Length: 139
Image (tube, rainbow, N blue to C red; front, side, top):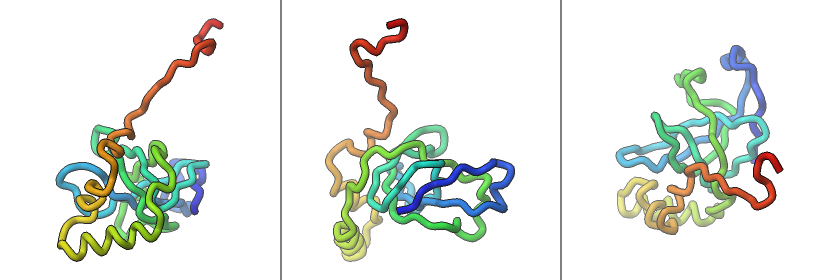
């Protein structure tokens, strides 16, 4: 388990940060995308995340946390994880099974994961607001 740290944006290239590599649920994408962990956000492999991807927020699955970004990556371009949608959704042994299925059928891992997930789970990454009675402004 890794915890993000607050960093002055001007010090991005000199300060060690915590990063998460995630599979993004967006048609046509393959491979892992790297995101920065904001201060106080604790992410574990198997967590379902809400992340920025292009101009939209999409669902993603944390695959691994690393203390160094991939070589050649411009860290100033890396965007932070927005939030955790569901913690610990995939246990470590389940990852092993999903990887074996993907390898056996020569299929991208994200496609296998989509089939293994309950319908619409990654779509839950959209921000939702709930009003609580007695908590309205002005009370």
